[in-house]
Length: 118
Image 1 (cartoon, helix red, strand yellow):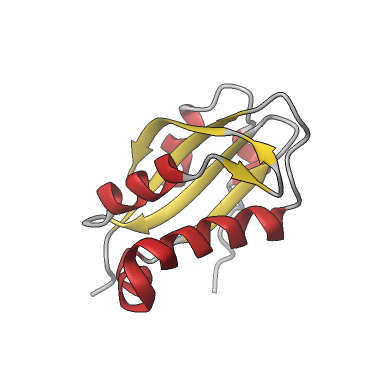
Image 2 (cartoon, helix red, strand yellow):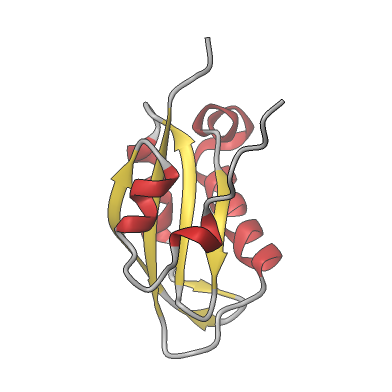
């Protein structure tokens, strides 16, 4: 059986231009590792599903039992590449479509890709 997941709709508040996706993802990953170690990160199941620097938003996936540790790690990040920022979680959902609905600036077609039939 496939493990259940949660999608966090995150608004990023900063007055500067956001870093590239790889730097953004690595900063979150390093903070998770610093707080919880390798085993903790693997339990959280962190995945950056969608990142939109122009809209200053992101959708982050984790295991359904690990929402609190991920939220705690995001709260401790105050800067990435010397860019001060704050994470604001605007919604948590079990599907990407509903997570996108929490972020009004995003278009669902840009984030959700249709499934291909096999």
